[in-house]
Image (cartoon, rainbow, N blue to C red; front, side, top):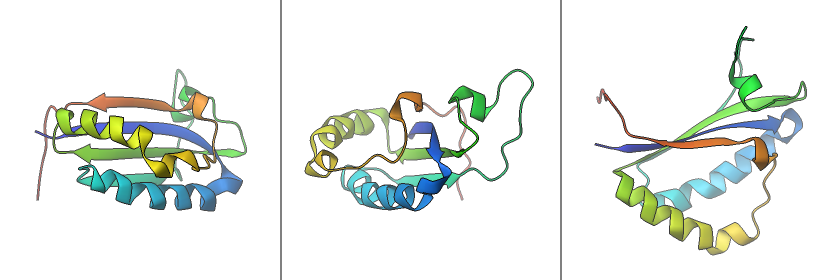
Length: 117
């Protein structure tokens, strides 16, 4: 069964194009190391919660938009091997991160259920 790496990150709304460029540069690297699918989704309907919500989780400011992103790997072992390679890959050295990475939430997930086409 596949393995999912998920991210939630607040991005300055003014940096939308910079974020898109960063994601477009990262996607081929992820694919080279075994990723099956990669999505970066720009928040456009994120309701305010009473106890918690996506914005609260990443301490998003009024001038920021929440991005929800995930990468599908064939399995956890492929992800773990890729993670080590990606962190030392040449493209990472000059990468401009257009958001505050300290407020990014990231986690790996093993699917409980999958529906495939």
